[in-house]
Length: 290
Image (cartoon, rainbow, N blue to C red; front, top):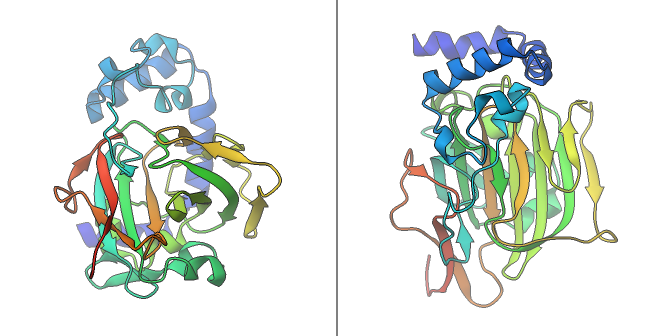
């Protein structure tokens, strides 16, 4: 059955389905919209008590419900160099082997492919570190900064729209480097940092706090926006983007921060483990070997 679910994704009209779902999610359908939201909350166990506004009737569209804000204090912030930027489940994390990122048993993908073919950018993360976090439909879907940073460029990479759930990640080669994605590149006090927002089936749009909606429209070519003369400074924990429906973020760090320190992940982290925004993710520490 699992193999059939994966195989079906190769033949389903994923982009058409995603466009249809996006249009429905933008539609203000009154009572019908509210009924659909109630069913979604019940099916996925969404905790509306955490929302800044827990009243389902206050959301005129499904999109507005899905990108709902949290109430103040819902996610305490840990003291760490890098805090978890989202609610979700850990897909994988660890060291980048040369330029290869581990996806699942038997599958990996290159940093160059992930960032849209920019070999010079990818080289900054040679033998660095990565973390991949899956956001399920029930999760809070705003994305925050794990550390303070200055945006230098944003790259839209067109691609496929496979699901990014764990089953698909285990079976579709190079999944996160073949799906549509938005690559956000930052300079930080500890060196370069990349946050990749990966699209998926039914993910109607991705947005950033400085640009607004990145898609739709879905551009046909890799497109880069540079911010050298338009500084965008974001503090740790500041909101930097949003997803519609479930998706994934892939984070990249260099091998060293230039101060003789390497990245060490939270020792409690493990693949498939649940994580929440604001928890300790990783710290830079002096080390003699990785």
